[in-house]
Length: 151
Image 1 (cartoon, rainbow, N blue to C red):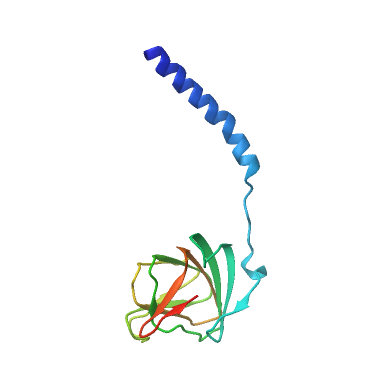
Image 2: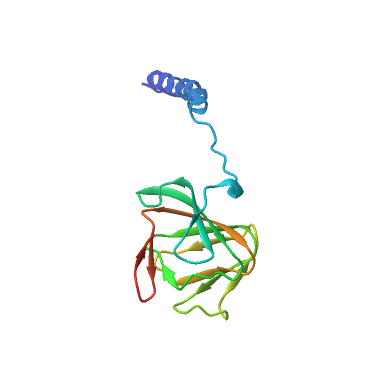
């Protein structure tokens, strides 16, 4: 029995060593330059969107780039799934609560990461021209405080 286990272990190790180069050869990195994405206007003036990876309207993971003009803000809203924001460029803020007030805003610089729990009411905006990456699992939905909007 010990010999069988040893042979099984050796076989599995050999299989994983052989399979690893094949898997790497089949899957190459996908590289995206945020400045060269296909930007589309959004419903909010001063905000453009670009899908980086995945399909935000379907099930599964996605990445969306958001390009804000300085002074652009979003109204308070929430999402039914956890969201992750990464500030790539500019000065950006995230506020918590049902009202878009500056008193509770957290100012963010490039490299900042924000994890927004599902159902958390928040707003965001750009102090300067900004680019932010949004990571989530679809389908993406935005629930406005006092209203509903699918994106």
